Length: 318
Ligand SMILES: NC(=O)C1=CN([C@@H]2O[C@H](COP(=O)(O)OP(=O)(O)OC[C@H]3O[C@@H](n4cnc5c(N)ncnc54)[C@H](O)[C@@H]3O)[C@@H](O)[C@H]2O)C=CC1
Ligand SMILES: CC(=O)C(=O)O
Image 1 (cartoon, rainbow, N blue to C red):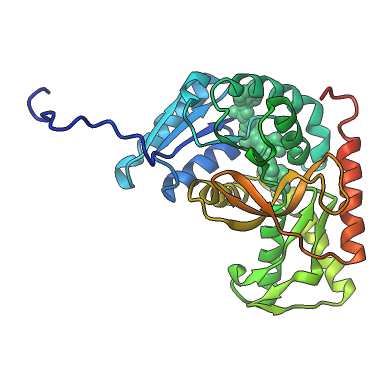
Image 2 (cartoon, helix red, strand yellow; image 1 turned 90 degrees about the vertical axis):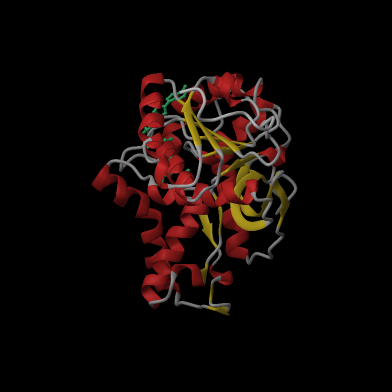
């Protein structure tokens, strides 16, 4: 082999290198990995899972597609290999059944998260942590609390997926592209999500719907995850595209505005709780919150979401 590639320069390049770690290489983690590979989000992906064989198999499988895309280093590893990452995406944990609430996963997934935070703390204190595992708002809160990281660095995917589902359904009703519809959702990723009907726009124009129509459509959004899980066992592609969008905003320092789960204390009279607010995302994580005015219904929906999320924490040590 020697003789073909002859050293010419020193070669070490680290500036601008984009390293992303994915913890949990199940359906969601690998859909995120594939999306990021295809969209060229990262230069290096490190895959970590409690099942090391699974992570190794996934890394190998993905690596076999690399000749067809831009250069990417992908490998499975332990937490030591996570050092130097700019972003860590946490997707490890149990998933819900079609008739199970996300909050029902809390005890089990909090125990998994505690283990992961302990391992990541030592090596990824500089990274932005993106939490996806459910119940994502409570998990994001504990990732922040247990890690001791600054609040801006721990961000949950929150209602990004709820917003996308709502925009998709609205767009189908109107026969326009989903990207032309803006329909922000705050609050919990789940039953207490708060759709901002007063802020829906289509191509920039305000869009109104009679209340019964609103309720019908929003009911579909709330059931959207279940509909997928009932048919194929889990949801993965929608959330992967959402996570990729969020990771892109972080790595690209994009200052993109999107709803994500963040520490809500100090906004809308909320206490110490993670839930989705409209946030500006850049390389720091959540850099600012958009203080969008809410009507009474939206404001009280946000308070209810906060109460539910705070109550869910009872019995789990902070
Ligand atoms: N926030 C959101 O919008 C969404 C969240 N989710 C959540 O994402 C999570 C993952 O879902 P799936 O990928 O479908 O599940 P999955 O069962 O396919 O994968 C979970 C992976 O986590 C790994 N794991 C378990 N304990 C671990 C530990 N201590 N350390 C490292 N890895 C560990 C498992 O080995 C497995 O590979 C679930 O909690 C699910 O509810 C799923 C879709 C959307
Ligand atoms: C699993 C989940 O949280 C969802 O698809 O909405």
